[in-house]
Length: 110
Image (cartoon, rainbow, N blue to C red; front, side, top):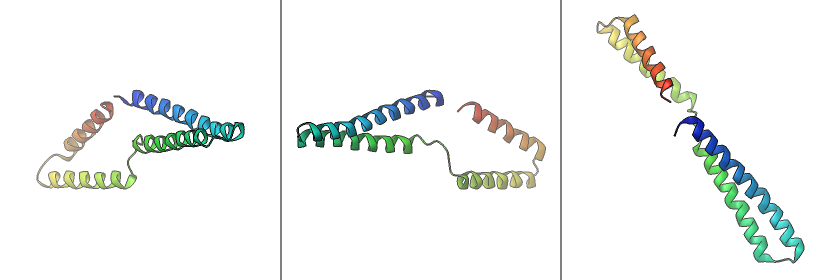
């Protein structure tokens, strides 16, 4: 799946969870006031709880940003490798151009 489809699916899941959560709360209130049916109140409460857990899980899994600590560590490793290759005789500007092209290709393929 591409990012647009993934973002849309996450938005739909979040909307459905929100509706289930609010509906479950309303169901608990209505069932409690209407005839004090403990089964209906518990069912509505379980629906709300499941919707909240699904919403938390989807939000956690759908996060596609890496921590800046990892980005900085990767950048340092890359820079160390570039320096090592330049020290062994590679042309620095050609090597950095190649890395730049690789980064651009990676961005386009996301």
